[in-house]
Amino acid sequence: MERFKDVLKASNLKSTHQRLAILDCIDSFGHIDIDAIYEHIVPKYPSMSKATLYRNINDLISFHILEEVKLPNQKQQYEIKKVPHIHLLCTHCSKVEDVFVETKPLLEAVTLNSGFTISNSFIVMNGTCKECKA
Ligand SMILES: [Zn+2]
Ligand SMILES: [Zn+2]
Image 1: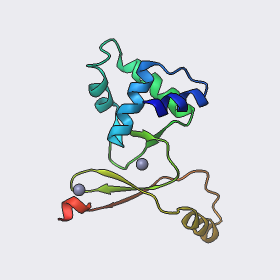
Image 2 (image 1 turned 45 degrees about the vertical axis):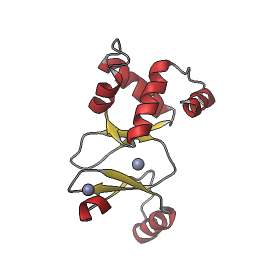
Image 3 (image 1 turned 180 degrees about the vertical axis):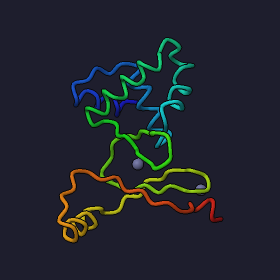
Image 4 (image 1 turned 135 degrees about the vertical axis):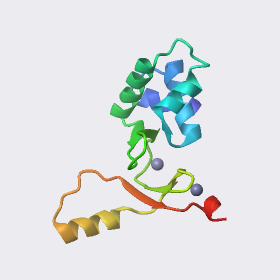
C-alpha cells in the first residue's frame, strides 16, 4: 500500500482509500478485469458503485499508473503500468503472464522492415504455460 501512496503522490493524485484498494487489488492479481476487481473490492467498500470504480480506473490510466491489457477474445483487463513487456496467454487455463524481454530490437526491426512508425504496441503470445505443460 505504501508504495502506491507514493505513486499517487508523484502524480498529484489524492491517495483515497478506494484508489489504494484498487491498486492493491490489481497488483495482487497481476492482470484482472473490472468485474473481478469489483467483486474483490465491494465487500470492503460496499458504497462503491461500478461507475465509481470505472472512473477511478480511468483516472489511474490517464496518469499512467494503470494500463489496459488488451487480449484478443478476452474481457478487458488492467495491470499496474510497468516497463514494456510481452504478455503470454495460456490457451488452456487463460492465465496471463508478463515476460520482461527487451522489445526495442523487435520494434526497430518492424520499423526497418515496413517503414511503419509505431506509436504504441501490445504484444501477446499464445501457448501453453509451464503448469499446464506439466
Ligand atoms: Zn496454463
Ligand atoms: Zn502485463
